[in-house]
Length: 214
Image (cartoon, rainbow, N blue to C red; front, side, top):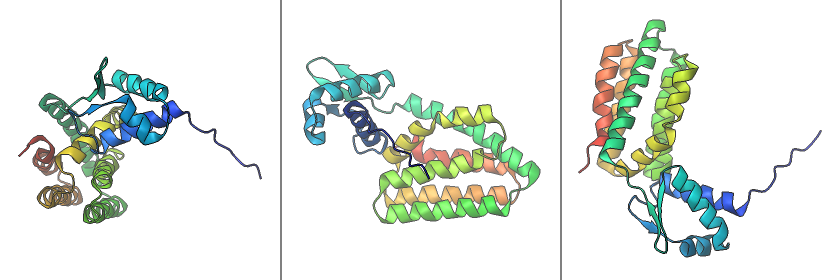
């Protein structure tokens, strides 16, 4: 039996993954200014790989670099929230319509209920990143039933923004967690009833948890 060995990742790749994960999880909030020295000291590496990671993250739109000052974590704008939510609503409503045509399987309903339990568990542990990831997984499980690879791939391109928005807007705040989970349960009920229009209405209400800020 052959053993597959994976090559170690470069220091630049490690810095890129580390900083990006902290941005997506909400550990580094939008508007914070990062320095190469701070990140290199934290990771125990030189500044060069951190600089390379910053450049890559700037290209992807997560950072804005200012010479001799540092790297600004680009905040989530109201426009970005609205655009992501609008795109999600179109795709998820289409998926709900397809599910209603065929009838929601018990396996799907069970999987969605299990993901709600995962969310509650992560919130109880104070794991905002885990809660946000489970939130994304919940909605992706619905879209997976669409049967349209092009729309599914487009939806996947929103995944990182979805996760960051959920982590920033909900975190593990008890009121917002309860509101998010209640929204998920309402979506499951609509799918179980085969009621696509009701699903769309509930989805609009549910998404307000990430678009309406206190």
